[in-house]
Image (cartoon, rainbow, N blue to C red; front, side, top):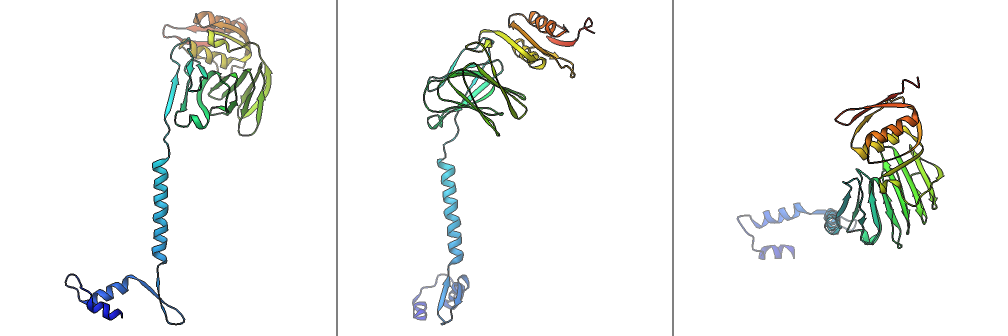
Length: 277
């Protein structure tokens, strides 16, 4: 039957019928069963078909996966104005801070990414998350402050409930509570006063705070550069405004027995007080 078909087959080009037949046989794998029946193997074709199907599916994912569409907020002025999110929630960003959210994914989950410090007033609704390099803060409807710079991580709850999660533990804060992360571990829950962070009104108050943290805050507010001894191990309880750099430095340094020098380029050098030594 096969030879009859071959005899009636119009062979293109200059190849003979025998050459074409041999070419066809060489391109297919033929297996002999025990009964002598010829079985054409199509495993290789099936494998390639599977690979092709996977490639098509993968391509489809790449094509139809919604891309991230960032909406970014950056605080440029010293007096912060609120940024409004799609649900009506508001963010006040501290100096040299920024936040962003994915506009395409907002309806699937309210999530904001923060670098620096921000105060949030969240409208009631579904879970609201603030993502930082140090942990995730989650709420339903509340007001709170998140600080994340360098190795520091602080969360303060003003109203409602705030959940703080890092890799190892979770803590729920109530109004008037603050938690600080030292290194990779969350610290103890502390009590605070006030209904919103002082920096919103250009006023700063510290309670038994590390000197380095206070100097970093002054750098942010006044755009200066402060150098202090690497061995400095002091803490301070103090308060100042962002209206006058020298006044702020005087208040902070006197409280810790330190001295300072400042040049025209706003470079500040901190040293131990000679009177103290």
